Amino acid sequence: MINININEMPIKLAIVGAGILGTSFAYWASRVCNASIIVFEKENGVGLHATYRNTGVIHRPFYLNPIKKRIFAKSAQLSYEKFWCKYAKEKKLPWEQIGTYKIAVNESDVKELYDYMKWGLENGMNKSELEFLDGKDVKKFEPYVKCLAAVLCKTDTAVDFKKFAEALRHDAEAFDVKFLMNCQVSRIKIKNGGLNIFIKGKDEPFQADYLINCAGGSSLSIAHSMNLGMEYTDLHFRGEYWVVEPSFGELIHRNIYSVPYVKEYPFLDPHFIVRYNGMREIGPNAVLVAGSQTYRGLANNPIELLNEIFEKPIINKLRLFIDKKFIELVSREWRSSLFKREMCNRVRRFIPELRSNYLIRRGIAGVRNSVINKKGFVPEAIELKNDYSCHIVNFNSPGATGAPAYSAYILNKLIREGFLSFNTSNSYELSRFKEIVNEFD
Ligand SMILES: Cc1cc2nc3c(=O)[nH]c(=O)nc-3n(C[C@H](O)[C@H](O)[C@H](O)COP(=O)(O)OP(=O)(O)OC[C@H]3O[C@@H](n4cnc5c(N)ncnc54)[C@H](O)[C@@H]3O)c2cc1C
Image (cartoon, rainbow, N blue to C red; front, side, top):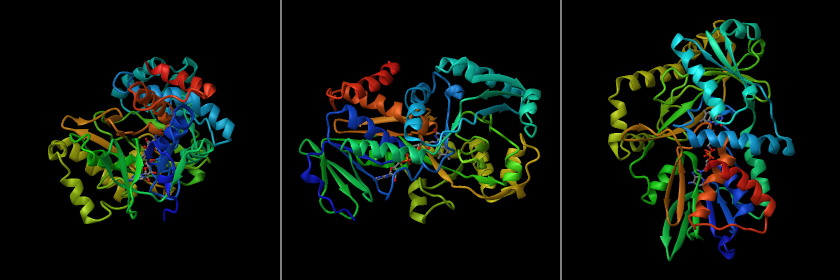
């Protein structure tokens, strides 16, 4: 129920979606842009989808290729260094520096670990954050972990991203941003030099001058509705977790991530995770499903499934579905969704004493929305723009880590391109903002 007539206010900038990205945009825009801001969120709270349903790790960017994943790596580094560390302390938000062992299970993975040591430094990390260990050293600290070698990243941190999004919302509201909850944007039309934004269940559209679309798994379909990004389609991979019985789980002290088995697809082997509240889980796998909110089964309904299969251009998905390796991986992921023992076996490669009866219940699943074009998976987030709107798609892991710096970077671009302007009265916030965005140049 919408009970506020926002058209009485001089709105200019509309943000769609109040996950970690939309709330980060709202936070910065309220401080540095000369605009009145409104956020449309279809749920009754912020951060209820990918922002909540994830692994909850502030990832340090040692495992990100500084060329192929430059923007994700920079965003993760700058968000940690110049935003989250201080913000979490100020707001008293959960912040547990658990650390991660990125481990090599096979000989061929060891070379990848040397790359990680190099990439970490290239991406701006401090030398003291990373350590290269052989399998015996790892055993001393983690007797239940079997590997050939590992990179220990001491500063990977367990957090609750939903709480971060709530804090950002609170801070944005303090600077007059209006959050309209239960408002699902259904259609956007360019009219009379501005935008008409239609909300499901409401006849009258809202008017705005500019729109930033951060609708997560729905971002691409919103962009398509404005004829943008028509060369892209998306695939949805549900990541499922299992909670590990504490008496076994607590024998392991840090996150254990294995080097990805295949690099060209977004299938990681499930990790062992230590949550900010001490809970231990394994996951996520990457189960191909029909929709961005398909948290159970293959599809929420048959129409969702048909739309997913026949999404144009069909060639994008067709290319993948005739690829034998891709199909093999999809079926492996589905097996680990259907059978707990399969999921357990994947982790037993590096924690051999894990037993499926130690996995006591399913955790909270989330969906990754990976964008593809005719060449395959796109490695970075994508901005799709026209004169009235900017749509962020493919904002995947470590998106939650990188959201504050990434949103600042995009806002700065929009200001440079003349779509938005600076509010120069707020000089302290402006200098914090510039400290981040200057690092992207
Ligand atoms: C399984 C999994 C594990 C992950 N682990 C990590 C991790 O450990 N660390 C990390 O940094 N990243 C991780 N990520 C990635 C990270 O969670 C995402 O990159 C990030 O949460 C994306 O944030 P978002 O705001 O774009 O999307 P979301 O959080 O999904 O927010 C989008 C918002 O838009 C709203 N919305 C959608 N459509 C509409 C509409 N039409 N109108 C109005 N509102 C709409 C939704 O309700 C939602 O609130 C993980 C992701 C997954 C799925």
